[in-house]
Image (tube, rainbow, N blue to C red):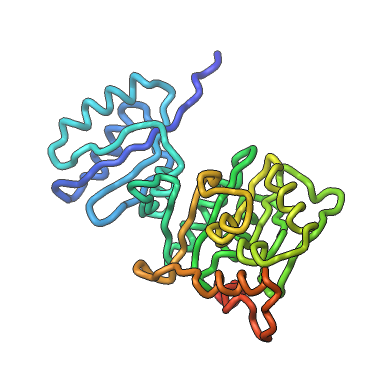
Amino acid sequence: MSTAEKKEWYLEYDINTNRAGLLGDVSSLLGMMGINIGSINGIKTSRRAFIIKSDSEEKVKRFETLLKEIDDISLRVLRPPELKDRLAVRHGRYLKQDKQDKKIFRFERDDLGLLVDFMAELFKEDGHKLIGIRGMPRVGKTESIVAGSVSAHKRWLFISSTLIKQTVRSSLIKGEYDADHVYIIDGAVTARERDPKHQQLVREVMALPSIKVVEHPDLFVESGDYQMEDFDYIIELRAEENQEIAYDDMKQQTVRSKNNLDFGGGDPFGGFGDGFGGF
């Protein structure tokens, strides 16, 4: 006899009275209802989150009714889990999502583990996805993309980059056109690049049904044929919460390069190329 497939639910509640045995009571109630606990974590100081599994939606509804009778807790959420729910349970903290523009997510250097996990989950999804990542030098942008690719078991390819050394691709070889790859574009490098073969390659990559990650998306948009509305997600990575992400120096470098006025030596990107030492 076949058994019903167990589905997952995300459970979250606030603790009103943090008495001894409270978690045991909730766990026992889940067990009495035949509902399994997949994972559990604390969020903030007075909140708990679970991924639970059940073969019956009716069991979950009955559990919800009983849970509301426990005065020591207040039920916040009980629903099929979203990506942000899974990450909250996994890491014990929430993704910081912009209230007005829901496609913007904010991270700090202390959140690199959460960021890598977030990107890995996005990279595992099939089809086209365009992700922009903003941030000042040495905060770990490129390294987080690479780590997310490794975690998602995806091959990554640099179309343009300043990681270790400047990379500007003008073509791809057979096997590098693959929907299962993660293509990484440094928007600052591509904005400065005058080679039409590179710009044509960028257009080809952007048309592929695959994951594309663009560092410095604002500069990429200003110099190309794309708009911010084309991005599915925008990630902002800061060294600390109040750090300003400013591109004035990079924009001046781009203008000089486009007009063939960049005669100076040194780092033409003003330090905006992330290195592995900044991870």
